[in-house]
Image (cartoon, rainbow, N blue to C red; front, side):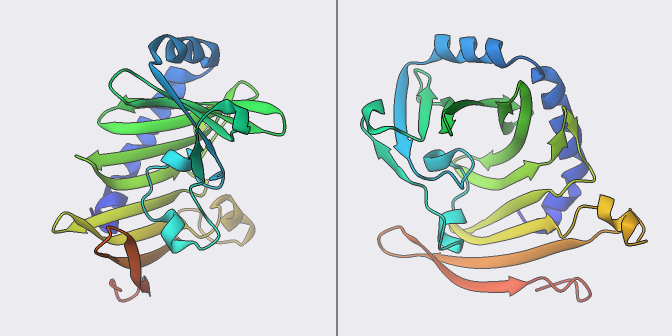
Length: 228
């Protein structure tokens, strides 16, 4: 998938995100009970807190592009004081996780809706963050953060998306797309709120003989030229 293809789907993504937020609003306890009843296996990890979902974050490049980001590591059991507990069904599908911060347990859940994998977690009884991940087979096409507040998708908020393209079944490019500033700030700057201030960066990758991703290039999108 290209960045332009993702941007053409952005409005649909916002609409679907709102349906997910509405469907699961105030259902934290029900989702915990459902996850518990379906859990056939558990794994634990330490580290990786910068990544949503930690060790099992679907984004394949965050820890390659950013030197200060790592996925953490799996640990054998909860005695190791894990940062995440992951819950799997009998088919090995990830149902969700618990993340531990400052003595609090954050419940995270994963649901599939309209061929997109939605990840969200609750803080103080409300869905706090929402992520959308689109797959083609085992390949991730995009991994996007959708801004929301009090159960409502925030079209004026700052969204963040990684869009992935493949060549010969291997990751070739990853494009990072985001609003540069919160559009609510445009009013203060006396700029039209509908103005599209979008930042885009393209990364190129190769896969070495050991199957490890190697970053080979970085390009800033020139919106006036329409290309990199």
